[in-house]
Length: 410
Image (cartoon, rainbow, N blue to C red; front, side, top):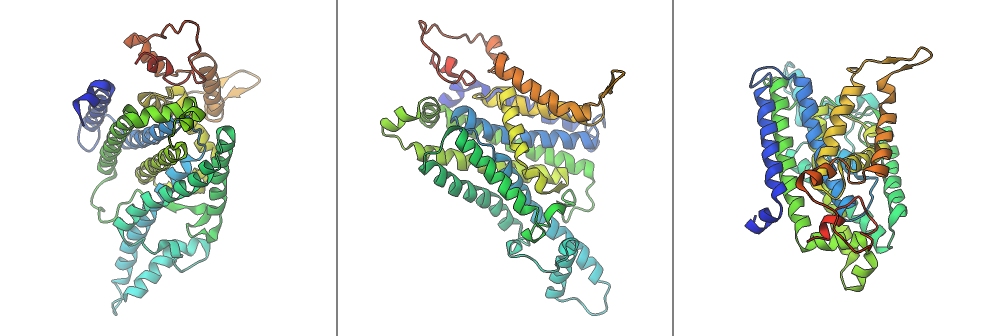
């Protein structure tokens, strides 16, 4: 990474330093490696939050910088979870089946073991054979490859069809949402090959690590999630800091002019859409082993809408804003929906925050959109002294929520 890149983006070093301090502090306060001040369940919540921050970074690149409001990126997030979850469930079930068959007088054959694994996994949906999509489930590295290739391939095909037809704006958002809904409805079927509504469970039990406690595994996943978030932040900061970043921001602001200048607008959009889908899938592959279960409800279109809300609240067009928004909403949501906030009795009605949290979140989104389009990240502009330049009455552009004011000064 060149000195000019770091000099132009001092926030990268600041972000990495804050992330490292946070990870070290949580480790010291954990049950497994420290003072036992932070519970294992809360460490898992923090680890999952870091994964959500990573997918929020992807959303910020495609929406905040490229101007493409995708309402389907949580589908790629879930596909990444399914990809790794298939290996986790296969390998863990294999250990159980092999241990059970070892008690037989006659050693079990490889085919008997495979049949036992299939029966254990798919008996819940009335099947006893592996679907074709499980052909590589026995191999960790092949499944890791599929975590990248399947969401990336789906994004590439969908993006190519959409962008070559020059579908933009709200129409593209509707198409991405329709893709997500269609995929979710398909996975709800028992014959989808992924156990239908039951989903994949027991993902927190890592194969070959029976002797490792959950409190230690939770810290390991926290480390992995922090590493992925740090690398993702550096990568996307590098992408948006150079010529490529200037072009995608120009596409966001005036697509027709960029096309007139000879740039392949569709090619840039397709690359961003595919790259962010892969990043979302990697985040999902780290998230669901910490959650322990994944089912088709995770692909519901509302999840992708929540993702857009996180980025808007944090401040789109700012990578650190996306991280702040996702972390803030995730932690506060866990607090409100976990029963930690007492209900408010009004006499004629009792406000239960578990039921009303979605309303509060929606209200926050509306208020941010109307009165603080820069989001929480805009507070850093005040601290840094970044002010709107004097444009002699000229408009700043169509998107006040992005960094157009600051870009105008550079």
